[in-house]
Image (cartoon, rainbow, N blue to C red; front, side):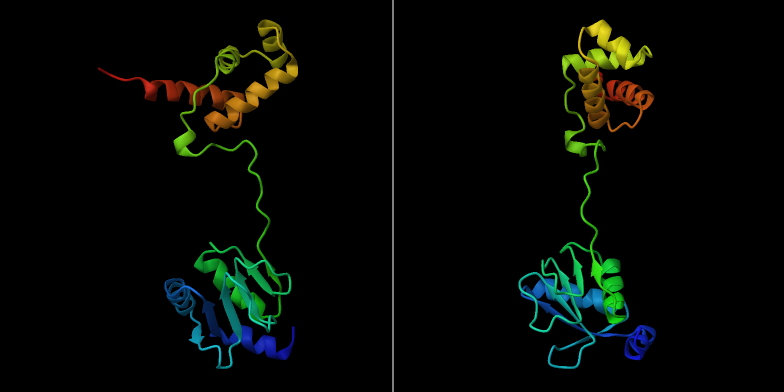
Length: 187
């Protein structure tokens, strides 16, 4: 790390120029930068870091943290919806001479569905597979009972996991029972 970068990092209070086309967004970013302990300066002043939101990056991209800007020349690149903590960490890292990139979004696989979709109906075949799971049957035994392939059973089990937000067979059965109790309408 260079002596200049070392001085900047330990100074704690960085001079940050905030660049955003939307005035409301600019004021929110300025507030976030100020609350993180940095000083907001005009771009004409000598800024340690430029925080650019959306649109196109500034001409000089050496010490720029871009929010929602897809440009590999930037030292810092975060998604537009990055929170204040992430922005502060990126500002400090770029000031120290590091390169910051947001991790690529990862598919969560068979994670729970959104609450609005959580009550998605189970298909009749999924209900049959769920009943067999409740009996403690193996995938192979379920395939024999329902006269379907082992691959199809695995597909239905994964679908149940996704719809119920479960990770194990036991958890799927428990969540289905809980869901059944909560879906009962009392008259």
